[in-house]
Amino acid sequence: MTKKLVIKVTAGADAPERCSQAFTVAAVAVASGVEVSLWLTGESSWFALPGRAAEFELPHAAPLPDLLESILAAGTVTLCTQCAARRDITEKDTLKGVRIAGAQVFVSEIMADGVQALVY
Figure 1 (tube, rainbow, N blue to C red):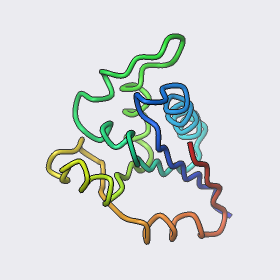
Figure 2: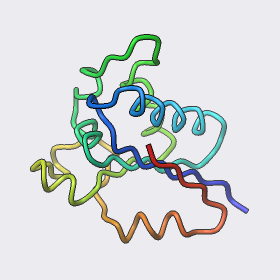
Figure 3: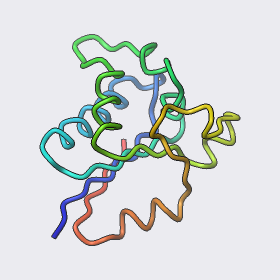
């Protein structure tokens, strides 16, 4: 059975601890060899754009750009379709490797065998 972790992060700079926890868990899972799918929704949607993660600060937390880079290198990062549309973000605006997909893809991922899902 394949181990996969799907993480949906809804928080951004509005709830920095919750946001940082989601990215940290995703990066640690990737480093541990777990297949990771990180979903950016709500205020975390902005981190799909170049330079936005560098603006995020939280004392005693790993730098968000480093976490995001490691997740992109070995996992999947998806920006919610509706969240992107509400913010006028298109795929040409996003970081290389970020895809835009909707609820159908999210449900498909979390319903697969061997998947654990977390929401932050």
